[in-house]
Length: 121
Image (tube, rainbow, N blue to C red; front, side, top):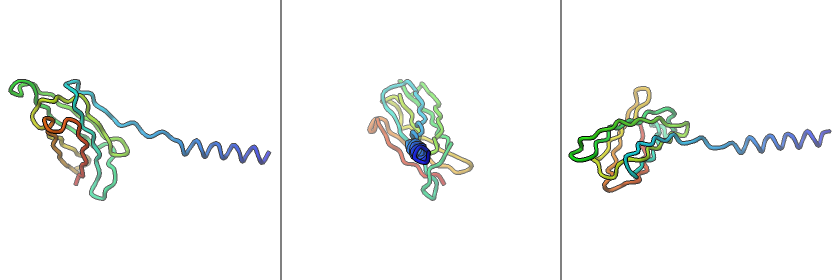
């Protein structure tokens, strides 16, 4: 009986240790093949949960076409925007959470796949 209890406890501890990682929120813009991966941290270097990442994308001939995109971070401070156009003006991302703000820029002409680290203050 004690052996069965011990094995059950060991099994439950092993299952708790193997919890899946949370999914990274991803927005699919559907405008091209470029992407941006974000990691948002606060001034102390801790990940920021539910930080809002917003950008206005201008693309097409003479940058006439426009699209607003917005995604929020997960509990690890991560988010992703996929399907960005490869020919567009540099994209400025505004990140904010509870009065703290930060910005970062991606030039898709020189860096189609970007890994962006942002600290909001």
